[in-house]
Length: 240
Length: 237
Image (cartoon, rainbow over the protein chains, first blue to last red):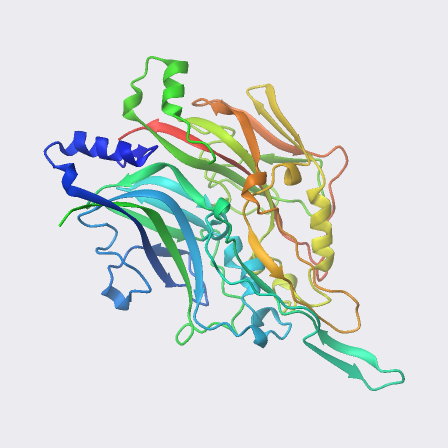
């Protein structure tokens, strides 16, 4: 089982009771964000697994994950306090918006995979979280850039007397996951994932795959769309 | 969760004899999304079809994206404390819409796009009463639930875009209010005991807004969800 706690101090007391002989004055705590991101393929998929690769395996880089082991935090305890999801794209040419749904990732936010899915966290095979529409319900709550524009991007008139409107492309659309901190998904009571405890974290689309709409922005090889899950909490580790 | 209440202590005081140190408390959501009938309705029923059941409107099998209850009108063998209630009106993803809608390349920003649908969604949001009964007893009647008990999650939309020709319409968009502080707080929190049956409906005194042939001459697939956010107490393993 994974125990749950209402404050960090109770965790030390729990571990003292459970492990007894350890000298907990020789342990230290630090705030830590454990993160994992994977490619959201343009065709979509019914399941994306997170924290399933240790750093370096399967070509993961330090931007992809900081996991020491697959599906486990290794020799440290981790008290999970909040959970966030995140969407990444290396290059998003906002000016490429042409009015087509495929020309902007805002389409995916409005009516794509962001509006679907369910996040599941299981510890030792037992479900501890089931979050519907996780990209909205568990937003990043961070300092992401705000983009503003106004007015007309392009306008074409038809030659006539007087000239009449032929086409007009208005503002470039822009939307993001929520950056407000009060929208964060707080794990309360906190969940303790103990050292070497096995867990799995997945985002599932059991109602059917949701393909990327903004396909002129993304490219599975050179500019892949990535999705991530982050565990924000407290790490307990031995003092060295 | 704004508060951090010792729910196991609460259960201990209320029920007494069980060995509560062998129970685990978790933050947990129970949710149920149902299809909104394009012809309108006088009642939407929630938590009637568990995961694996069939949505009576869409005729699709309900998956965990739609609901995470495994029994009709019951949460099973757990104690559950409802801390807040959210309702959520949302569109099915474009790829799950009727072919006439999903194949429209300018659905979101063009002048033949979603405008009429979005306008109608705004109408739906102003209607209905959420009724919740535990057993046969009425516990909540929340007016205009999609407004009074909004989802409290969503997107930050800084600007929508548009592309149009002779029609004089800018592209519209709408979402449930994403402000977390606006969800309906259940105060005092409401407990649902193991195997307690309940009924959750949104009722309309006259037929709710009609979505038939609204976008590209096709019915727009809209879903309405009720989400209980609270604490689950279950035996530790």
